[in-house]
Image (cartoon, rainbow, N blue to C red; front, top):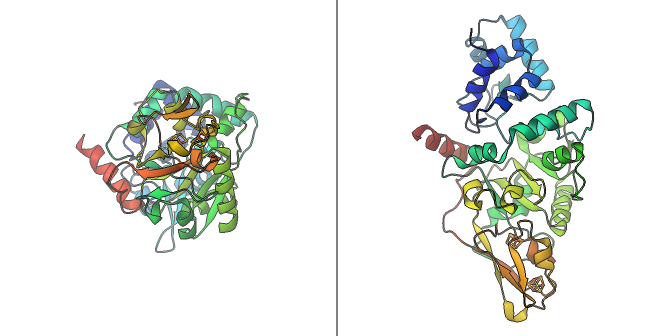
Length: 364
Ligand code: SF4
Ligand code: SF4
């Protein structure tokens, strides 16, 4: 019989937000699932969008295991945060695989625990999520799963062509439930003993059904809209970048990313993968240089090191600027604005985004 973990790795590879196959993935899966659990997980379909669930009958029709084995296994795995579950429209419970970015590898670190298990998972995650693995997750198709949303809560940044639904405040206002978890990137770095990033940890915001899932499992705490606005404002002042789903509506999370350990922004800062291959970047910085007072704040805060001070004037590398706007927040003279750099818009909503990504993947 083919090794169960190899079969599971192949199954997970074909998800919309799939797990690129490497030997390190097998090591990660062995730590996540017992062989019997892996068999049950294989019965969860891999052709669904992230956070789309199926009912028990569908799962039972895909396995030889009896209901008496499958139900407790699904419940245990869901309670441990290793598969996703949610209430379906008919009121019954549904289950789904955790897709990359929607629980793997975040689930091990969202809760902020630092114990032996977290240390083991942090080491395995670091081995698996190499630059090349991350590049394959986000880089395989033209439509990118995530985009940057410009900072504008701390000060009123002049923004040309930025639609209301692309502004971070309106994302919070549209949510029905909000939760905050620990940043998995900085948390895992801290667990591994890295001390050169002092950015805040509890700033990873989830919305709607994803918020419900993480709160119910003790991986995050529910917060009000006011607290969410406060966290986002403070993140802008710290120089953290808002990263959201590349959709006009139904946004499920806002990461507040740094250039040190973020699995995406850090890769761009280190110039490992060109920005447009990883993320949808709709905006760019513009500066009124005549009014600049040469303070250098914008160069110091830029999370991707896209600004150099030359003769006391900022020089922006437009090939690497991600239009995050945190430099505008830091600018003493308020001479930085954010402008649109491409005319297209994000897919209409979360479902349309992942349908588009799936279609592009299927065509490959
Ligand atoms: S220059 Fe840096 S901080 Fe400013 S918008 Fe571009 S990437 Fe963000
Ligand atoms: S932060 Fe503003 S004033 Fe200071 S160097 Fe940059 S553009 Fe000039």
